[in-house]
Image 1 (cartoon, rainbow, N blue to C red):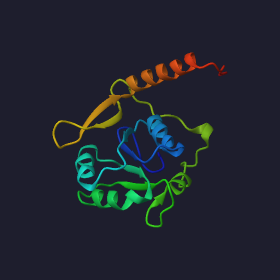
Image 2: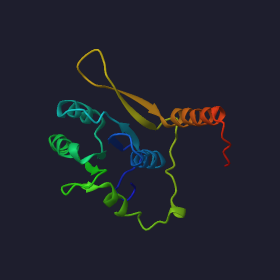
Image 3: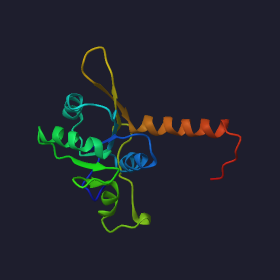
Image 4: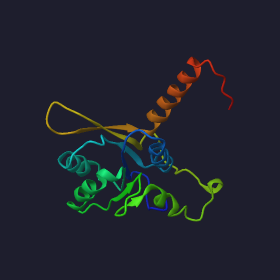
Length: 166
């Protein structure tokens, strides 16, 4: 993601069915201080325009069946947004191509997470439905996200009958 020019505060939208690859941009973005914005993959162009006007994504990860609609939406206000498809698509950058584009010459051992204040850095933008016709977006900071995620993992480990070794 750093090789793609993403930095602290840049929005990364994820719109796809639940699969393993979906977690990669989510956690990678979290490590560099980008803002994760999971969105309903069934949203139409109208709702996407409203949401993208607010969150102005730098990258959208989606399935190829949604890529053309997303590209039309980001072209209208001339957003500088890269559309990446999890599955292969001739017209768009695939997820594998995105991963192969580069690591800025760094090995996994040389990667350093971004240095940011988790209390004052937004980690998540969550779309919600509302009482009017417009999508609302809730913000969550990195500190609360990491704390709550840790509690979630601990609760799973405590209720599991299996033994985990760290």
